[in-house]
Image 1 (cartoon, one colour):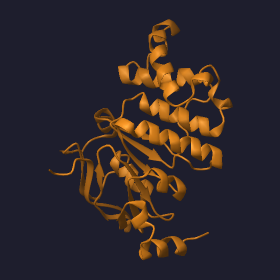
Image 2 (cartoon, one colour):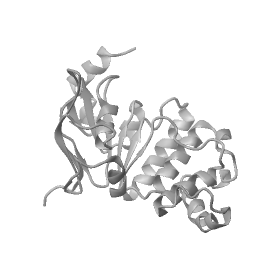
Image 3 (cartoon, rainbow, N blue to C red):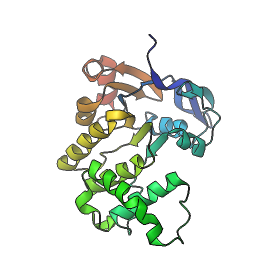
Length: 250
């Protein structure tokens, strides 16, 4: 039986005025797995994410999702297919409550996202759904809190809840633990593990502890190209990977 890959890229290239940021990258992301994209700074990880979500157009190469070629599609079409990205910079409304943030995400799915003039009562139907999502990420007790007051790690949990509200088949997480203390890292790591139960996760992540603990497959990029791929135990012993990381140690 053929492997079931939800996302594949073939010979993906992105050039910026002669500089090759992504160089012949062929990725295969297995359905139901947590797949991590790692590499030193400037390796092309975020550019790869931008190509997958069509924030950037590839110079050459192809992208397929569920066996369909999506290379020519626009970002909105890709999101509708079920590829949803959680941004590196927290993408929540700081002055709304935690519950309101999730409700807005649920509204987007209903196609009424711009009906801000509607009465609050029309959104009450979404409250139960929103509370269920908050419970999933351990935020039900924070529902009434204004988002700006949430601790940093909890903000990322909220961002994951708003991503889940869009019912993604493939979640793209961009540096989910960046700038976090140990406790928050652990919280978000457990959360990613939990929400990956019935979906696929592709993440860019710097924290090796997180990658080692929860990834099924790791792709290492260096200078825009794939340097190594496989489970953590294998990749972490690869001399080329050790060299790439030691060479860029700060």
